Length: 383
Image (cartoon, rainbow, N blue to C red; front, side, top):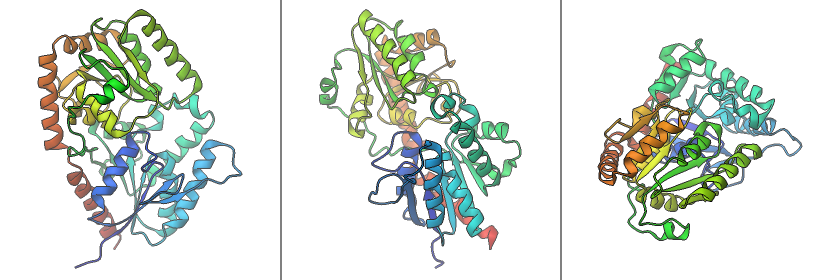
């Protein structure tokens, strides 16, 4: 029996410090990969169990340069790996440098594309030019680029035409449907001021231009008065964006009842309960390569109304597991949400269909097997 490949998984986020979809992806991918390869996870930030943590240089003030300094530490630490696999620009530089230094394949999973997120300049300033450079340098030289959807694959080819199509592999995100299951309890709802007797639409995500929070809040002014809106939204990209959302929420709360804003990132068990009892989950993203949170809602048996962008149509089957609407269109979003809020039987049927689809098509074990097979093929090509 041949020895298992030594794989270094490089990421900014790893539990318990997970704030976005890429971090969720890495958490579950690592768990499913562990039986298949000799895996070491390298992350950034505080020391934690199950990973090698790398801290930025304390002397640096610029946030992007600080991430790059942690990347240098990562690249230095992965000597001996057969394959390095990086996630997001925060760790792509580490993968790129390690590949050059040790002459090993670099696999790079694209969870989003910097050229498709110009609003990041609000958050990073001149650092956006650095993150964009880093992503391009890593992507155009990686042995393989993993796109999390067919829509993302098309975006990669459009943004980086110098990457040959055969180097781009589609391996979708997944969901653990043994963990994300409908929760019949209601204590979390009551604890956050949500009335379990009233229908509600729920949003879960960061406060960023990408997620379309402001679009949802403008749509909420047109929602059926009997419905609630539950906004689980924190980690604003900028103080200005948080102020904008605060103003919109305050205006809504002054004009109608049932507007609940939970501004912190909630524990997983609380999110699962809030998703389980929602009539509909709203995903108003203006850009979304796939959107793991849609899978989380589907696994909890909840219908989804999502933007027709990126990989969302690959998850949400129109008229079967939810409804699709144009991005950045509050009126269309409100109409779709109202159609399900006013027809709970239809919403429930879509939720059941979504749960079935999540179980049948988005297993992490299958995704890990595809990923491990890619590692083996790349390693064999070097031998």
